[in-house]
Length: 336
Image (cartoon, rainbow, N blue to C red):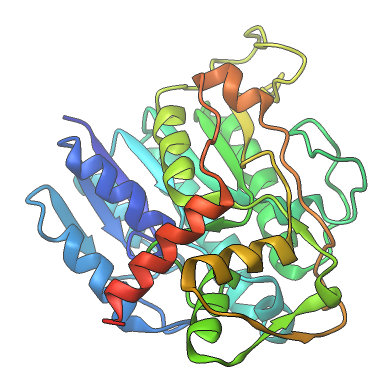
């Protein structure tokens, strides 16, 4: 079976894709620094499940550390790379930007440097819907301009797209960038809305609701995201000069490089998302209405036509079903 290198393997999304590959019989090399950005016990619990598989190798290092990834590529020669390690969060990048520079930009640089000396069959690198920034045209398509980022986090992810494209062009590395849209689900991060809303509602504490609740998000359930990533692993961008799938295709004209949105393609009002939390918990949420936060955007909405054309897959999990699955996991994990 193939070998995959998954960066950020103890993180929310990294854990899910690594677990999926291990269940299919793959060998997975997981690298994660186990940073203390949020509760380490959650990361350790995720990794403990991965370590139950014989095919899993765990490496605890920062991807931006010089020569760490070079050594891993030399030792393991991965067939596929799924790059999910990053410093996440819009607000954190405003308060403390340096880790975002180091992990997101320097870490991606180290990964690409290692890959050009030992090229895998396909590299899949995570980006974000935040890169669309001030764009007002919706739904967001991969071919739309994305030049007005509104947070340093978004700017670092946009930079990684440009850097990856240059390496793809110069060294022929097949690269797919995927842009995530508000992912949620079991094993999610404590700093994300789903986790915060559930915790606060169950404990009777108020929920901070920004822009007085006048926000829309294209909430994407983790199982749908995981399936999309797995399918895209087998859709390797072709070499320069290949024909595009359609007018929606973002395939570069000068590199085996493509950008793909992964979202639910059904934006939901934030208030309706909170109502789904109330339904799943059986409790009424207390709302602390607040103004818009710096760096945030009012709405996100993914055009997922290209994902459907490439893989035949469209996300199908409703917010009501997805939120219930998270709340059930939360209660089970914390013994509530």
